[in-house]
Image 1 (cartoon, rainbow, N blue to C red):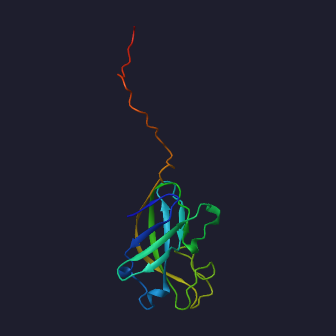
Image 2: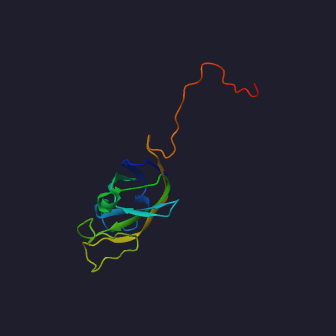
Length: 162
């Protein structure tokens, strides 16, 4: 499970190499398309996080973008709201030639096929891993906030009928 806070950058460490699909290309020719699905309202966000592929895991960095209208999925930017549980699915995308994260060269969804097909066009190979993301509210931004009052110095009784 990934744990993160709203309005913050976060990292995820996921096992990807043991489920790798396209082993014919070097790991430098692989990127991961992450699909984030909100459990509450069903909204879907896609992102190519900044990544470092290690032997046993991949470190993915997600960058928070405060303006939902300017989110660039190819730069690892997300605008995840509301807080709560999200499902994530990680898809392997591979290139034979030059890796370019752009609308013209990288699929935007797991079913996207870019034509004309070429060495410099990414191809979704399949689902590598999936799981849950818990997005907690950042301190001070909770929807329900409680104000603590000091304990009374005397008794705190309510008398009736006097």
